[in-house]
Amino acid sequence: MDNGIFAGLKVIDCASFIAAPAAATVLSDFGASVIKIEPPGSGDPYRHLPNQPGYPVSEHNYAWLIESRNKQGLALDLATAQGRAVLHRLVADADVFITNFPPAVRGRLGITYAELAPLNARLIYASFTGYGEIGEEANKPGFDTNAWWARSGMMDLVRDGEEATPARSLPGMGDHPCAMALYGAIVTALYRRERTGKGAHVRSNLMANGLWANGTLAQAALCGARFQPRRPRERALNAVTNHYRCRDGRWIILSLLSEERQWPVLARCLGLETLIDEPRFATKAERHNHSVELIEILDKTFATKDLAQWRAILDGTGLVFGAVGLLGDLKDDKQMRDNDVLIPFADSDTLTIASPIWIDGAAKVAPRRPPGIGEHSDAILRDAGYDETEIATLRDAGVVA
Image (cartoon, rainbow, N blue to C red; front, side, top):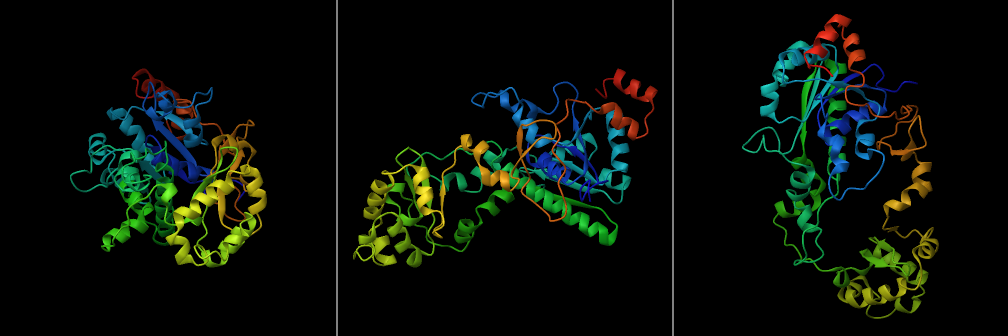
């Protein structure tokens, strides 16, 4: 298992942006050989995401680093018959084909499941869309901010009060969990293939994953539940599942769901022992009835010490709490390093983010830098049986770059 659980597994990443390519990245982390197909010229548009206004400025293409590590790059023009012929040859020897082209585009390019499956009876064909593959929105384009965040109700529900402006999602915020769903579908199909010898078409989409992520409240709505009006933080209904600003401006969030047992512990940690038997706060019901008053007290209390001091006081007490993290904290996060959440690239000290799955006795491959556009085109074609004359012909025609 030195080369990974999926050593020898051949994967074609014929997708763009985040969710579908990231599923291929997870397969590569466990040793799969992944060919990243991009159009000649400027390549996958996702390469250029950091150039958008408002994105962090860096000498590194951080978007490409995380989504395309470990992969080989093939620049191939699928709009040509020759390009599709190259893809078909690769598919005939592949285990997994991943795409996020809408159904209509797949049809125009001749890369539907119906067209590729006859080339390889063992092929796992994984497709990812914004809104599913059936119905009037099947070909509608969408990013996670539209189809996952907004469509699911989460964009509305995280507002701090009914009158607040809906909150935008972050880049890849929905795509990365969606990638794990597609990865799970692929691995499930691979397991079935081990039993039957047959490939399959597996699917997932942003809309379905968004509703799954918002499943608790969505299920409540489907059951006809009566929803409480949303209230701003200062008027929250439960003071011990709320967040508070510390003296240094950092925030801490409490999640005390075993409230009857944990409230006295919290009060003692905060030096508020007198509140334990205070009639307004002595029972769970009374604390909820007087939540605004308790929030005011906790606001003043947490404002007396820095976040690090409160962490030192609360750690080891069994209370459920967390610091509201800042991205600047990451490099010094020992817990993330100890658990291999943050790992260095094989050829540099630059850190990257590990896929969130670990299997005892199965080491992941050390992450390798992502490919340039078409960096491995010739090598991939040679492996597929093309000779140098054929490769030169494809290059001269602009089919391969």
